[in-house]
Image (tube, rainbow, N blue to C red; front, side):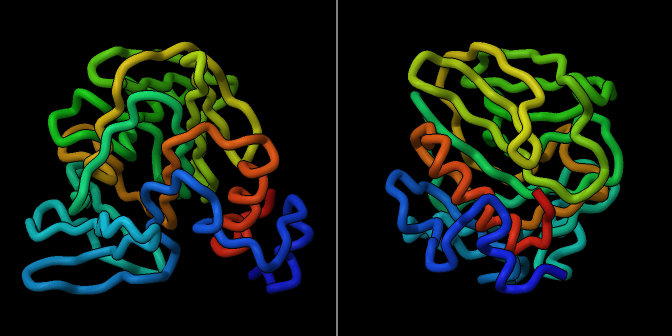
Amino acid sequence: MLGLGNSIVLGGAPSEFTIDSLSDLELWLKFNTGQGAITDGIQWNDQSGNSRHASQTTDAQEGSGFSGGAWTTDANNNDNLDLASTFNLAGEYHIFVVLNLSEESNETFVSSVDNTSFIRFAQGGSATAYRMKNGGTTANITLSSGFGTTKAIAEVSRDGSNGLRVLKNGDSLGTATGTGTFAFQQIGTSSNGLTSAEVHEVVVFSSALSSADATLVRSNIATRCSITL
């Protein structure tokens, strides 16, 4: 377990830094914060100030609920949390998701409700095959390595030139070019979703962060979620 003092060691993030101090923050589902039961379901409250709370009231898609500060899915491969307020990422974006996968086979971790937008590790069951769709425009990347089955930060960004980057704990796994609008409406998905996995935190910006700001966010998340960078 990482102590409070490690907030400086991990990437040099100052202890007073908070994610909501940066502009263009669209969604922040914070580890072990704002998680609980609602009528007929569960909810993870958005800490970004945009009230995009993530909830599910269909039993078969709730997964195993919240455990140890994370949302956990089961083996049905169709669990998801729906955002109360959706948004479209038409240009730059930067997405951080802390995942703990139990296997690598079509692991879709964010998506639109109609699957015209999604981000997926292990496309087709191949650990190094990564696929994402931005409004139906598909980008396939052969990663330098699979994401793996230990808790880590999955990071995806698109810059002003439509350059896509995929990272794990700040290390690049692959790049590509991808255009189109990403409709952000669900954590997980009802089709080809996460299999017996854990989602510990989700942070989304509608801009591509500078290297310095990305390091601050990454280190802040890593400290809270007990991840060594």
